[in-house]
Length: 158
Image 1: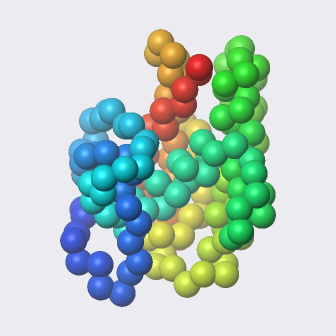
Image 2: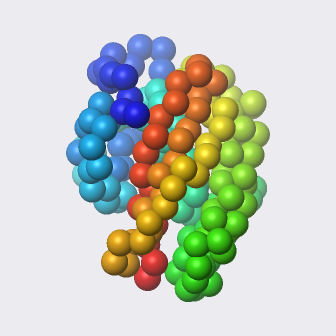
């Protein structure tokens, strides 16, 4: 499901730098994602900001950050180490990483005043596939506003 719509009116909202390139959040077709920092290509808020926060957290190796004492998950390290050799093992590891990411975000959002479309309710792995050196995981995220967004998380295998 694509995002219902976007706006450039950020009144009353904080905005993040959009790091996923020139994605069209309203397009329901697969689009290439290259997460990177650099020249500012745009801003995001709302559910797009929440999806970006979730993907960053899921792909970050556990470490210590000032606002997140246990920021990150074990998923990225497990993928890069080659430990996820079969689908059952990947799904098991992903579910633990997802649980960790969801709980970290929920804990953080209780201490910060956010619009409901920027608050996470649940995230669920729908399906996954390996294509070359990338594993693509399709995830359904539900916001506290009740909106479901399905997106693909690209996960490197090398």
